[in-house]
Length: 471
RNA sequence: GGCCCCAUCGUCUAACGGUUAGGACGCCAGCCUCUCACGUUGGUAGUCCGGGUUCGAAUCCCGGUGGGGUCACCA
Image 1 (cartoon, rainbow, N blue to C red):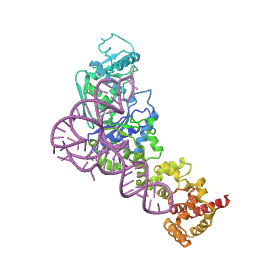
Image 2: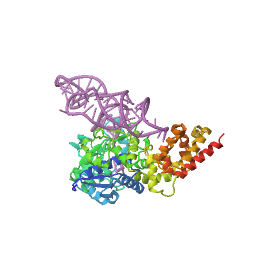
Image 3: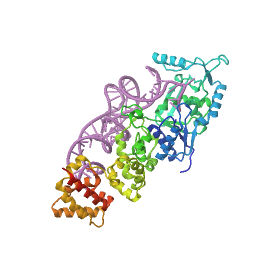
Image 4: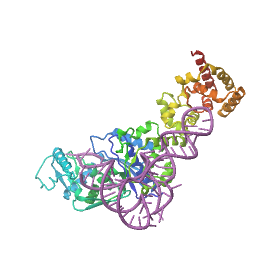
């Protein structure tokens, strides 16, 4: 695709983990840019010196990388751009579009509460708006002198035309008393300076938009197009947060979710394409459009994510799942060094039908890597003296099966059991307990093949010994 | 409370103003089967309410109600 003039950005503030809502914002911007050959910019909004941390920047970068959401410019950091903001603030001051405000936080707090109580808009009184130069001195903030006369129209790409009355607009603080610039000023300056053409962000920013438009106008910059996407809600229908359990990408990652599934899930919130549920990134790039994006908020449904993840466990090539499984096997204490990749792939192949996450897969894979204790009730129920003899004969047969693969094992054992007048059902559970230590596992013969002849026979013998020792 | 946004099964979502209101997750049941899963078949369940416009409204308009967001020297 030919490069276009489209420039979008993801602008998180590094005050914590990369939130799932943030991921969705990043994702939409990324798709938008990639679909049109535009430029994706990453900008760290760290002007709040007290809450921003370098650690959080690391989390954001890691999260985006894990998801495969790359960027073309940045990461820029707003703390490195204070000169630029100050120039703009000074310009507004010089043009009498901003003023010094000497009100203290305490005073402001009081009048805000009064306004709330009275039921009017909680906006600044304008007390310092018309102070003459030198009338007061000392610690102060800078406020933007918000126009009060007309209306602001936001032609939102998702919501359509939204109107705000300017008499609702507050004189917002654009420079703190410590000299640092605030959000509404820095976004505008940066988006203008970086040539951002489309601002796609959460609906929680919609009410900020008219203030920002006033700033664009005061600064005589072109206003970009806006698109405000509906929010993701928790089960209680409030904005999704840590309160609701997992809300950070990192948590989903460590719970064993695949980025493919997470992206698939997120993109289906507020958007659909016919009756399709599974979308690869490639398909999304082909099919998704902001125009089709729904306006109503969506509740985060963990069950559906889980189902999707189960689907993706089977779609992602097993060699890749094997590779991604490694850290989880390590965490389970099952490996210290990487197993042979081909073998591990076969392990994955037996497990992927029944593991919804990598964590679950690693957990279920335990018996492939080491000896475990039998599930007490299962051993009690199935490893009985009556079955001992049959298990012994099975062992004898297994020791001669050639080639040692699941098809051959299956047909030979089945054939033999028929001759014995027995059914596979009679032997399956005891053998399963012997080989996997539990009552639910991948197919018996697949397990044997992956375990290998030697281990299979060892475990059968061990089970028979256990039977002899019971009572 | 002011301002703004939103409104189809429990949840995610389809439905040029004309459909028995479709699909998916979940849940329930059957089938498949060496277990558990996977898969498959069927079932459960929805247009927030009230007015209007129209031959005809989930769909358009208005009003309620409900939910959400936002009102910081946070972003």
